[in-house]
Length: 80
Image (tube, rainbow, N blue to C red):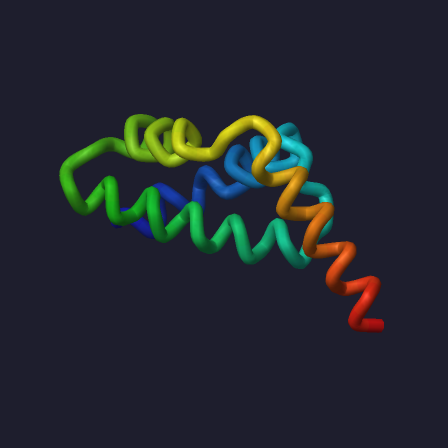
């Protein structure tokens, strides 16, 4: 049941990631997976999707995702 609710909201979550500066698709997929797991944990504790998702987002500072993406791309560039 939780997975179905989360899956029906994947486009919302992905859109929020893009709006927060995360545009690199491979990293997006990884972060999306982590966020979904965290939301599911909140839902298993009795929260509804919106409350759980809002709590997860509240723990992500404004520039965190764009900074993470920048650092990831720099490391990938150095690796190749």
